[in-house]
Image 1 (cartoon, rainbow, N blue to C red):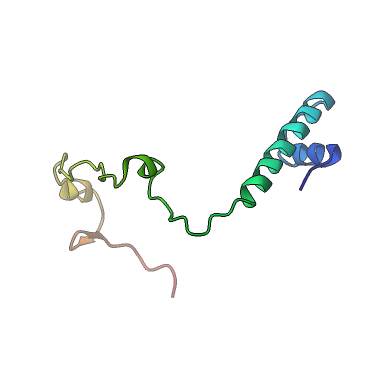
Image 2 (cartoon, rainbow, N blue to C red):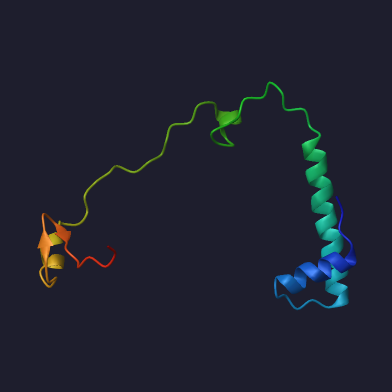
Length: 100
């Protein structure tokens, strides 16, 4: 797949980008280069290649998940937040029914 100069100008207009002729020609070359690279990648045989959960897994093997500890850092202030509400019940805000 490759683009023409008129298509690049049309795409720029749809994206509301102000682009003169020189920039459109530069964008045309760069976009066609990206499409050519995508075509090359599409032709690579990946059968038998297992997907990776992380790019470094191919080099380092199985990676541990680096998640932070789930620690409560703020106190529960539900009652303070709900105090100015007109009506609450069981920790929920009660609102008038608007759809029948």
